[in-house]
Image (cartoon, one colour):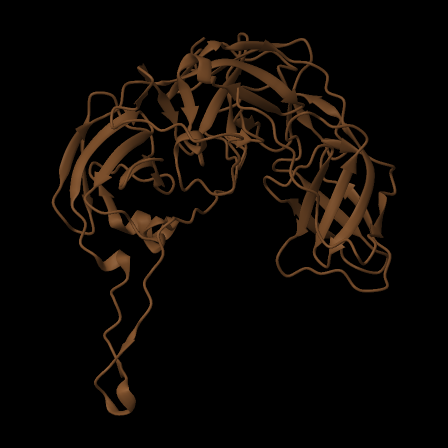
Length: 405
């Protein structure tokens, strides 16, 4: 199925959702490149800085010694750079990077890639290594050579990655969302399973330690890098595709490899329509699926657990993180509505946490009602009353865990 097909899409291949979620026929071709906004996440490294010490020799028997320099100022030499896939490289340094150097803005300023190639996320330290990092990049062009330098140092060259990431299958998991699933059994491991500094993920087991060639137990593994900003084309049979954008923090939810991709806001899959998914940086074994009607999640209760944190409980455990990327609206008579966004990774079975957007707060003593924004969940038309938990309850239960697949 070519994205350049001149055939106009038939009506209803994608549905355009109205304010009330009603389906409207889409009668014109949908151009590629439609915006989809998904936040990216930060990452903190493992290595701390050194404090100052006091010694002898000054009045009072003590004198301040010169503080040891922060690790980030220690010179680091680039030893090796190799492309792992069309969207990632492996970089080996003479010394480990410091915490500050792993922050998104600092990393983008320090890593200089030639030919207009850019970092798309932060470096991840491979487990069991001293200074070997998985570094996500924008899409590399086949056959092209690139260079990398660090903090103005010498440049090393590498060829664009050609080993596209393999995903076993794609499936629809919500009215507007799909999962593209890689499996360890196929020799494909998410970066959270192989990187020692992967913050905010749960691999539910020991890290997979790979050698410099990414081999463990005689088997070579592909590594799925951080997917922030990546998209998947979703094309109805005989029509033109929409771009589905990566949903934050869904690569390794609960130890399961299942990155989610969502259609642009307002669009939904049409039940019975056949779709195919593809991307320039990966290949999918079973790449087709039929659109299905999707039952909205049923909200059972909404509770305030902190001044700006809300716990939403569903009537049943959805089995995967269907809260990801969703929002709530909070209404109170005489006030402007407020919004709360899902806290990535906070799902605990049938419950998840939503935090008020910055700058908004709830007024003590007032009654609020919460309702989902969009048709991802259902509740009474007037919304769910926001309840307070008992004073002794200040947090949430331990997160549920499941095995990697």
